[in-house]
Image 1 (cartoon, rainbow, N blue to C red):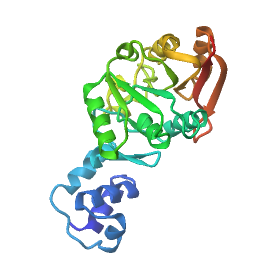
Image 2 (image 1 turned 30 degrees about the vertical axis):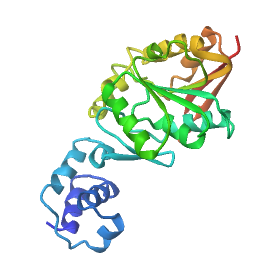
Image 3 (image 1 turned 90 degrees about the vertical axis):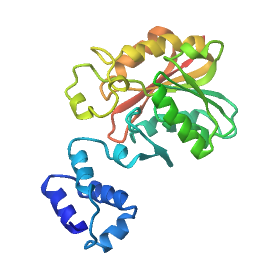
Length: 267
């Protein structure tokens, strides 16, 4: 089968053309530009199986092993969520609060592939960035990303604040699980780790834990920034207010939804 025949087959199966081209280029070790100018090139055995796995819902990032995030190329594995563009909103907000040259202590909770921590370490190299994950597999992926990119982050294995005794921070950012256990979209995400997605009947279990634990690890004037579901902004703001946070604010994602909520610890 040639490149052109494989792309025609993918279209017939309903696969996005750009995704099909990306996967075939990856399988051949070529660029998409090369693919478009060599549509009569024969494909090695197994290429259709790669396309079939995408049709079965496996994310492109798992099939290629990489995902771009905030200007960085990250390795991703089934131990980690695939970093989404919406999470760049959280990083941008954190950068707004961290002036260039800052030596602030910064924490990424539930780091996964290391996306947030590494983006902040890349843009604010003088900051002291820490990252936590409860999954040993995810943390190993994040550490490997940091080493490959030459970015310094202190990695901690454990659940939320458990491995951080005695440490406090100027800014804490987190993209925790926030999907409801019965959310109808979960089956479409079946190839990603469920423990990094779902958080109880209302999706707020981990957000509650983070808001409850953050004051003991925030310096006065420090910020807690949280990503959450498109319809959870008011609920997360209520959690922050009840815990004593002030200056509550939201940031919108690319679709205009209030995707991130945060507050300042002034007590």
